[in-house]
Length: 231
Image (cartoon, rainbow, N blue to C red; front, top):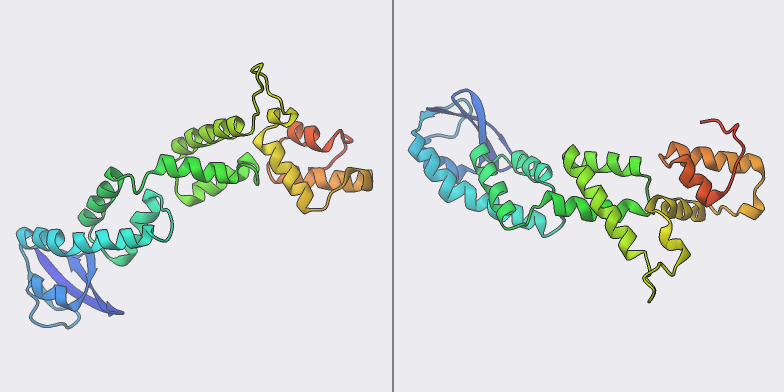
């Protein structure tokens, strides 16, 4: 197996293994690979045993510390964490080992994260916007559907007030999360039904529809509107 030294970026060198990108590492790590000089294009032969030992004793502990530092600042999806570790230059085997370790500890749990993330967006965005944001976040399509359904159920439970007779005692308990998001949007826009004419109402309906809210939900919150609204 042939390791080739490539350009230095910052404090790290890039390494190619048999012509393919392998990792980025510090000058001190290179001595473990058997490099005798640090010039671009220099090659050295290395065994699988040496690679495995360096990955286990040097790169893996370092990658674990890096992942924990990142998670100390914010939550990450598996895809986001993998991208970070790839950008940092860790070998593929090390990245996979770290991701498996984080999943085992539930430090990276896409389903749990997706449910919390979806719930945080429910009262501020349409379902279409939520789906788009979750896709951009890196969640898998099937997981998004499951997480959104769980978030909606949690929202319904938390916004329902159950009386002693077992019935919802709050009329707003039956309102959906999207309807609540519409109300919040209208408040931010300073919308007051009694102070707007039909033309301004049409513009507001159009704006809500283009944000992804359904016409039935818009009607429930904003009231009836003329059918000649342009979408």
